[in-house]
Amino acid sequence: QDLAAAAALPDADGRLAPVVAATRQQVDAAKALLTGSAKRPLFALEGLQKANAQIDALLAGVRDAQAQAQRQVAQLNLLLNQAQGQVSAAEDYITSRRGAIGAPARTRLAEAGASLVQARQLQQSDPAQALQFAQRANDLAAQAIQLAQNDVGAFSGGSSGGGGGGGNVMGAVLGGILINSLLNGGGRGGGFGGGGFGGGGRSGGGMSPGSFGGGGTRSRRGGGRF
Image (cartoon, rainbow, N blue to C red; front, side, top):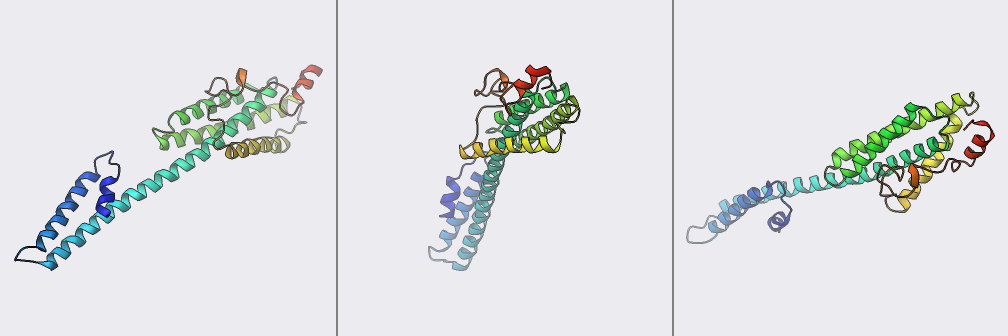
């Protein structure tokens, strides 16, 4: 049964076939030692034990590799959802406060979106590399949010704080995005922003200026804060 199971496994790199063939030879040799006039059952048993150990090791290695690949895919899916949430939250925050946000935050956001696109492109062909890009997208988006909060705090003379209060709001936004992503089985599936990074949800690369918190439009209309 183990030999049949090993023979049925996918062998993309060609490493399984030689081991399966060698094990079959050992089994055939053991059978030959149990037939004919000169039976040698002890040698047959020894040969079968070696064959069994060899095929068990092969199956264990393949199953370990499969389990590791499954864990990597699960980790990648989780990190992609997290990165998508971070990028979307950063985009919403920056878009709704565009008058107060400087170039560094916008640059981090663009880099985060590009990394997220690369992660999705490599998701099937190279999960390990995709995992690195997804982590980079997540980190860059977090930096974009922090830089944007600092810009807003400086623009408003410190009243927005740029830290605690803004961080709590962004945490709530990101948490909602991630929960929605998990409940819907994988999130938006597109890319960041719905505009230039492969998504399809929002037009124009982001939400309308007054959509985050309801105060953006009123502030700009009243005198150019954010």
